[in-house]
Image (cartoon, rainbow over all chains, first blue to last red; front, side, top):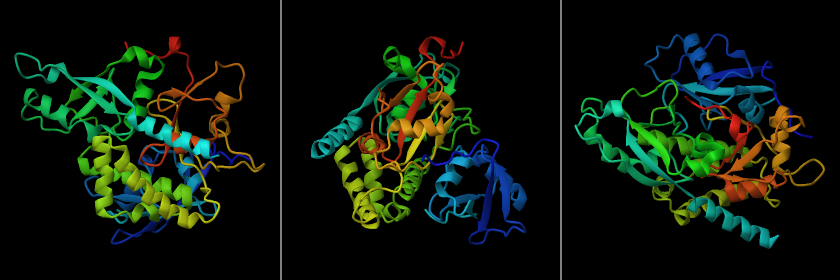
Length: 97
Length: 290
């Protein structure tokens, strides 16, 4: 009856889609523990892209809003996943303001 | 049903009328004058956010702070930096907690230096406006499966929303909120029932959870606050051994049987989320900062 809760050690599949002029990832699907905060997701993506700290990076969900950086990945995935995959768009300029 | 609707509107107006008397002082290590500035008293609107309501506080203390500091102002209560992106009423409930009455006026310390960039987001005013709109888009998506009702607000309407938050103007807020609900009603069709009710549940000033919560149970009955909490925090709400947690919405202890959709209509914040604080520890054992 109640929606399933994703436990802390469950893995969540995240698919990163590039938007605008942002660099393209070779591999765009990653698994993270459900308890990961968005801040960590953003910094890991930054590392994958080789993007220095001073360059802006924006992460969007559903091509419309940016999840709070202190949000728990499992919660956002439960709310907004499509067939078990959370699709996030990343870009270097605000895309959906 | 009609009576309930009227009650919900009255509760929403009451929630907007809610204010927290606060007194601000400048951090002692940032006072650069012989005489420290006098404290600044202000009533903070529960529905607003720190950056929208504290322009006067900043003006009051700025002349006393280090001239080269020039950093973004930030606020602290009892040694803990206040996260401005949480609505003020929720912040107060989280920090002053169960002893809220004894805490008044709420004592806050103003800082202009040493912005804790790792715990707080940057507070430039545009960021605060953007933050509220962003959260509004998220809550719209949860309710009707699209962020369009919030995304299609005109610049003038966005300004209206900011102004309503700055001046705590419920009527001005309602004008914008009605625009959003009208757009949402179109995509929801005849039943008007949202896909899910946007709820964020805090268990401490930095720990929070959210999950999609359908307004109706599969059995057809209304989802109660209890149903959401038990699925998010089973260890707290299923065990009988631990002390009964206190559940606080808009500063008020709320019965767990309250229908979720009604509670959202009455007590949600301007970003479209209903904020619930679940306090698991009784007041006597609450952690104290020495």
